[in-house]
Length: 394
Image (cartoon, rainbow, N blue to C red; front, side, top):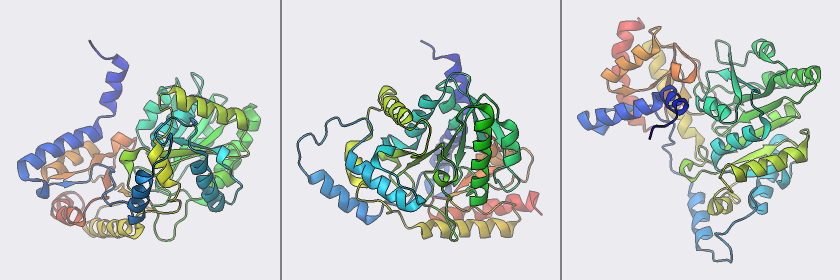
């Protein structure tokens, strides 16, 4: 039996991180894991906060009828209310549990949203560089990705987005803090985007949704705050998860928050709940829903990631690499000293350094460093980065 040509082609397009993982396994086998400096995966290296384990032990030990049974496809009411209460304070809006749908991570949430809003042929505008899985999520439901470049410092280019909007546009999908750049879009930019979408929705006589993927929203530095899309635009949908800020990506728990002013509100919420069920997710994990109900506002110690960012940025800046300092997440996206970012990444592999070429994120000419790693990995990579800097950066 052969798999579909479409899936086969998609696998080839999405293979960069997988290739780095496989190459890393070979290098670690050859040189020893301690001698390979692997920045390829965005897998948090911090343990969850102590409170997580305390709550988890309590929840697991609690015996109650139906504890592991089916629930509403939207999730436990008490969990949804807890999230709504927290978001209301964060965003300065009155949000209720009925506006929250619990999901299997942010990836599951994105698929639920796109299934709900897209008809075949609808376009989704995505600023680049971007998380490449968006391509496949949109295609799952017959949508078409319309990629739009950001500015030199990875800010949203509102002029370019405006030019890309048409009567075929159903949504604009943003990711802030961004993977792979670490960019946090400014309040002014988000408010400007909201105004543009409101005007274009009226012009085209249709709803255009703003969907924001924000699993890194708590991982921000230097006093940065992620601006509220819910305040900026009424037809907005917020997606997040607990994978990164609580360091529990394997638990697959996220949520969708629908703007209370969205049109048509109840139809959209009903569609999201239906899609959550019919995509096969059925409901988000029961135990984890009970756990995070008590962990709103909790996170790993963000200062640890900021110190890793500063350690890496200081090292690479001194060596002559060019980059925009990230305001959040745990990714750095330096410019490749070679025009061919894939060739440069291959040269880094010769120094036992594993990064991902920017071409894999729609950002050719750059490469992504995931610095959610032990400090020894950053420090140990210095000699390899220095060697190539002496060749290409000076």
